[in-house]
Amino acid sequence: MFKITVLPGDGVGPEVIAGALRVLEAVRKRTGAKFELREAPFGGSAYDQTGTPLPEETLRLCLDSDAVLLGAVGGPKWDSLPVQQRPEAGALLPLRKKLEVFANIRPSTVFPSLADASTLKREVVEGLDLVVVRELTGGLYFGEKRREELPGGGCRVVETLEYTTGEIERVARVAFELARRRRGKLTSVDKANVLESSRLWREVVSGLAAQYPDVELNHMLVDNCAMQLVRNPKQFDVLLTENMFGDILSDQASQLTGSIGMLPSASLGGRVGLYEPIHGSAPDIAGRDVANPIASILSAAMMLRYSLRMDEAAGLVERAVNDVLQEGYRTADIMQPGMHRVGTAEMASLIAERI
Ligand code: IPM
Ligand code: MG
Image (cartoon, rainbow, N blue to C red):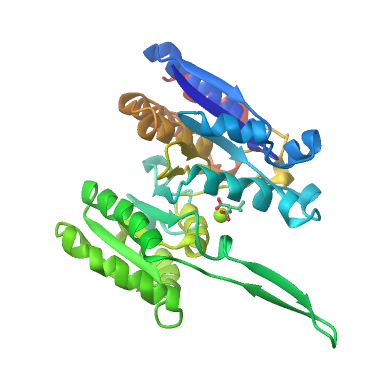
């Protein structure tokens, strides 16, 4: 019996998670695997219900799970709350920290039938298959922050970017190991021409290279990397980044696949893995059955693979997604002329039926 804590969250979170659960139900029927699903309040909706975005009981359930499946958090309704009660700083970041999931894996794969859905030319993105490994529990996101009023008016803010050798080394190892099982190319992204943290990053990553002679390592400055991602993204296999660079570059990489609604993620490194689509809560389209559930369904596939060691089941889900796209079904974000437009729930049902 696998214990899975499900955190639907806010905005489109509950809709896309419902899609992922429909697919997991199909996996259960097909494989006989036993899932104990425990849904818990998290994010803005948890704040509304309980007065805190990360209730203690939710955290306890997460820590006592085989995996956590998360929708999305945040929305304008909670934007003016004090920082510690906001869904992002008060729930998502502490959850990542408490689960110690320091390595965030964000694959960007172009499904063959979606090669024309990207805003980039087909020849630039066709066959693209890269993975961003983003450090997830350090850097600017977690450094000390302060805001002071200045005597003459206005403010002064301080944000701190901190990394230790150990924090860089452990996430770099994840990236080297992943590159070794893929095409053997690792690009480490930094801003070593300006930032001291990046100089340490580069030193530590370079220092590990000797232990992975089968991996070809290169270093790239983050601004150049942003440009190369739209110029020639197929040069990349595995990209390794610190927390904030990875946040930005993974959104950019997602658009190469046609839509941010396609990109799943796995956050690993602790005892319990955390799985979430990379998109946010998209409050503008929430509750309208238009969000793309595929990122969330593919996150469930990553959960099957990495936390539950159900490789075959993960493959089944990924193939079902591919089949449905091949048959011409599209949500609004990946709609193309001549295809059948479907809503969130129908897309999930179509995928579940093919498992
Ligand atoms: C992501 C999101 C989060 C992040 C936000 C919601 C805090 O953008 O998972 O990429 O910045 O990590
Ligand atoms: Mg982001």
